[in-house]
Length: 238
Image (cartoon, rainbow, N blue to C red; front, side):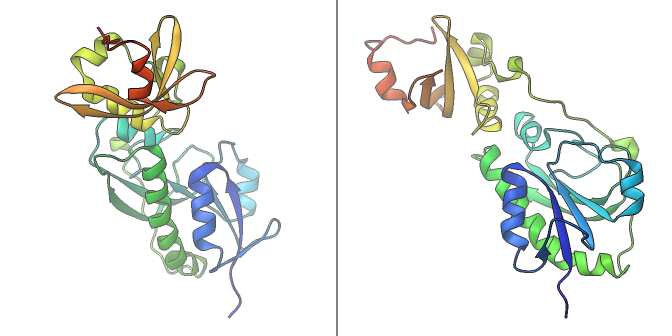
């Protein structure tokens, strides 16, 4: 049987993981495919192009929740325990198409963007391998999204990256979630002597925020214990 020909549109960790997982099951080509598969693309596709060809999108949330640019980061930031993936048809509106398939995925306590994106991508890819042939053959009943349950995410701003002194003291768990949501990039940071201290990894210990690996912007990453030796035991968060 001839393999289904697919053109992939997207970039970054999420799409790269999907590509690696499905490449043995489909023929990946650049032009004239049976199907365009879109994930983390970041560009608008014209209605004319959508009407002319078959496009489907893999979105890393349970649509219609967490539409937009940062569903994985937002799920971690707001402390969600469950997220998921949704495979949809595409129309001229953002994350608006009909649902082909969807599935729930647990968010582990230590998940950061990197680990959660890979987890969602792999589960999505396994689902794509099963449903794309059925979709091509019109064997799947599509369903509309419940627009009353819609929520939106936004792009990460520089302010979203900042861990404030107040957050460190009053809500260390939220500070830790910020670190996880923004790793490996753009990374959360706190201000120290008018310089940005990037936080790569952190944990909660005795109800306090404890960095594990840090980096003064423009310098090398180092373990937190090595970094604070230069402060002669002073608690730099006080």
